[in-house]
Length: 465
Ligand code: BG6
Image (cartoon, rainbow, N blue to C red; front, side, top):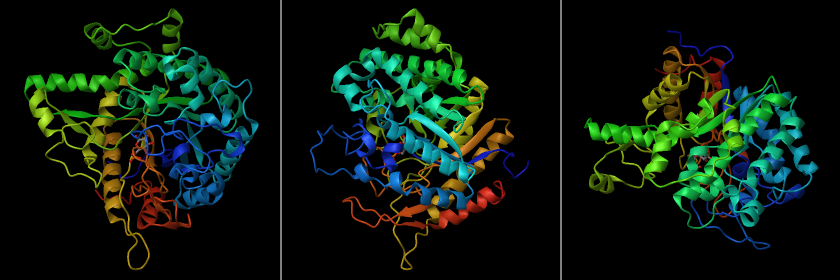
């Protein structure tokens, strides 16, 4: 086995507009769902008042500091940077007659800066945000009209950036909508399961239409989906646990099944029937779903367990999202269970299932980094986490899995999504920022910066098995 990753493997990092850009009302940007959730995607909606404070309003000020940040990424040797376009910079209200030229121009500058450093952009069309006006005035993705609004947005950016962006993703972690309906599909308040699946259906149709548009407008581009890689293990080898695990995995795999195979799988039809869920699906929708993605991208942070025993499951369920913890795994400071081998398993599972190239577009360790006496961040824990995960990626490639690249989550410290925390840092680059907004926003290199630089330079040969 070679200890080098294949030539052409893309190395880099991943960011989301609402977690880094700031400038939340600059150059005509409209308010997004993220702007209305200052405490993160699991926090309440807060009406914005003039002069109020949300850490995301400025975030790490990437909007103004991107040239210096990209220079640092380049110094690490990045060949790829995943970013997202804020829909509200292009169509501030979602249903505007014309796109906002100032917003389009800003992303031109961003992509040009990346090109100057030979860093290929991988662009997510929608990463955990959408125009707030579409939630207020249309009821979010529950409304079929959103499909056309999104398609117009997608076509606008494909046309504009056709010569600059050749790698695209549709919706970030599209399978999270079941857990975060406002962030995922713009549904407010209590909603029924049927309403959530109807909104998801509209979004899946929009995803298919975006794939179609991308293929028409930029024939040499590739467009992928983006899944939360939520691999679950059975808590025991009892057949009932095995079957419950299959069903739990189906609950997220169904998104990928539609986006990769072009139709609802039979197990979902049965699930809808058994649970009295009737969706409004039009013939044109089925046609749109047939436009399948070119590759599959996913985030990977943890695995969890499933038991068919409801009482036991209730007892064991801790603060690790909603999952039954695995007694064989350690956890991060935030209770996310660390499972490098699970990444190899997941890569194999997805490859076996779809035979489409895979791209790991998020992975990393959120930690409360503290400067040492010398003022620097010695983040050996992050190095060890990432080393072990990358070793498993290399193993999966050796298993025959086609992997296009790896973009670590938050290569520079960003605002976390779940609770808008600054303390949950993922970066190779430290940002001087505190939760109350204080700090110089200065950037400095952590130990992991030099480590990742070495890994990229050696095509992975510097990893410790
Ligand atoms: C993924 C999201 O779910 O996880 C990112 O796509 C998010 O936006 C990341 O930041 C890590 O979650 P958190 O809450 O630690 O930021």
